[in-house]
Amino acid sequence: MATGPVLLTGGTGYLGRWILRALRARGLPVRLLARDPARAADLAAPGVEVVRGDVTDRASVEAACRGAASVVHAAATVSSWERDPRTFDRVNVEGLRTVALAAAAAGAAPLVLVSSFFALGPTDGITGDETLPLSGARRFSNDYERTKTLAEAEARELLARGHPVVTLYPGVLYGPGPLREANLVGTLLVEAGAGRLRGLPGGGDRRWCFTFVEDAGEGVVRALERAAPGDRYVLGGENATLREFFDRAAEAGGPAVPRRSLPYAALGALGAASEILAGLGGPRPRVTRGAAAIFRREWAYSSRRAERALGWRSRPLAEGIPPTLADLRAQGRIP
Image (cartoon, rainbow, N blue to C red):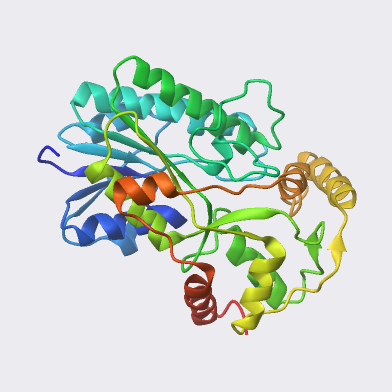
């Protein structure tokens, strides 16, 4: 890699903080793009330069890219619902384009795009990988899945035009860190600990790919160091059903989730009502139609390509669940 800092977008997020740690563990200087530098105050350290900017603001991105050696683009609107759905397009699709063009103009390469398993699509009945074809006819569960898939198509088009893009697909993240929408597993564990999780959608019989968040951060930096333009890697982990995950968490001393099956149709109806109320000025919906649809599908993937090419691994659930529970207890989130 060329000399100069690594520009990191999304560094104040759940995964972004672990990417920053992995970069600093290598001794790499980092320029952190933050909409609100105050949110990055706890990340300030020797070798970390915090600059104000937003991926939807072209001028600030271009300024941040100047002098950067490479770019890790992890910024995204990770949400099941936004009052203005265009927010997803502005950040997840147009933001990628803005960052990629600014990086190219500044000679910062490669651009490592931290995408999502959602961009690869559901895997009902199979174990997917990076070769899953994009499907323009796919019915999306929510705007996040839709725009991450559009961003995937944008990344491939940028690559075809000569932009050195490497794309990564982390699985369902879990592990230590703040409770954000990207930390769905932690949120569900907290809900279970408070007695508010009455069961699992459909009984929790769908397989998901669970990735320990610290390992995902390490995988991003390994891709920055070793991947070639056009490379695409799933940064997955152990595939397990939701019921298996929460049963293992309970066995490790975590909160138990009742074995009740929450009907998908009922969750969808509750989500529809909640969204209507939110659209009329009510509180943000805790359940959405999109979330109910996500739980209906399987999201199971293989990481063999990343394991072979990057020498990367994600620890199994038996190793990842205990520190997850310990961190939630340290935060006072679960008993």
